[in-house]
Image 1 (tube, rainbow, N blue to C red):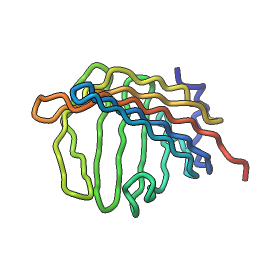
Image 2 (image 1 turned 135 degrees about the vertical axis):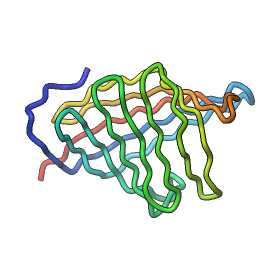
Image 3 (image 1 turned 90 degrees about the vertical axis):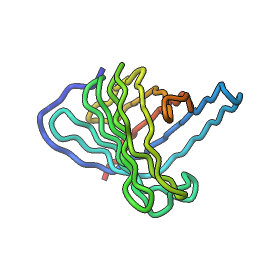
Image 4 (image 1 turned 45 degrees about the vertical axis):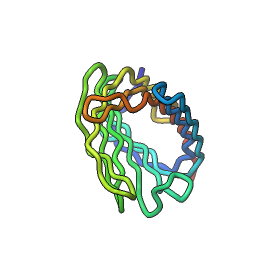
Amino acid sequence: MAGKKSGKKFMVPAIITMTCVHDDDAINESGDFELTTKGIFSREGDKYCISYEDSEATGFENSTTVIEVTGTGNASVRREGEAPSELVLEVEKKHHCHYGTPFGSLMLGVYTKSIDNRLSDEGGKLEMCYVIDSNGAFVSENWISLSVKTETV
């Protein structure tokens, strides 16, 4: 559950560690990815925001990823830059979302299984599990875990 809210806005530098697991049972392919980077952690009202600059390691150079989460039921993952995308995550609901790649754009179905938001003003953890389909056909199940450690200035 999300941490106590003081009602004040804040924006601080943070160390973000992201672990992504992609599992595609159809072709027995699984991929794990871990990235630690500097970014910004902020809150406005009841919405937490995690943002970081993408790099060659993520495959989306010259882009910024912004993850916003409200409570334990709603989140979005937005990439701004050369291959813009926005995935809307709402627990137990499916959304059709635009996903940009360096090779072109796709329209994907995104069904969110769970959002575990343990963020507080001091940082914390956010885990999201969702299934992606294309034209109704299963593409992959994805799990993203973000750990946020605020930096003192």
